[in-house]
Image 1: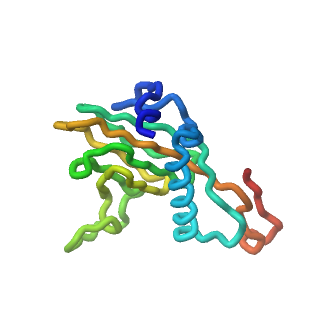
Image 2: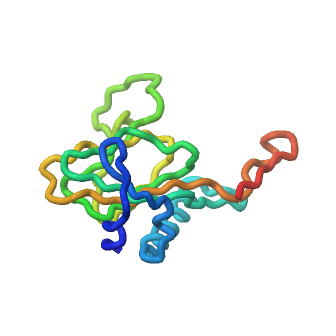
Length: 181
């Protein structure tokens, strides 16, 4: 898996590089990682959204990110996606982090005794090798510049979209349902 990921043809991004292969998870070389991500997405979808109708998440694109010493991953979000994710292939577990920012300003600024991921405007999570982080695609996120890094940070990122029936007749007082495929 690592040889396949490391040997991808890359393109320069703002601050780092990414693979030209935008369907990397469909490669047979990554079938184990792909299976793990699909199982995790299914669990996330059920626990977070728990739709009453037949609606699933489908991975629409996937690519590898390569961040070397002195590089960073610019602040961005993922439009035209519902849930995005990043699977960390190679990190320095004690140093690497991913930052997220709320997409809106707080109505009231209430100082907290203890700041958490729920009451902070910006929060970070450790980026650990073999960890998967799933998040709503509209969240701005970024990775700070790598300094004093002993190795490159490599991750596989992906976007999803819904597949199935959305809407509910009682919500709209008409026969509105939409099938997305």
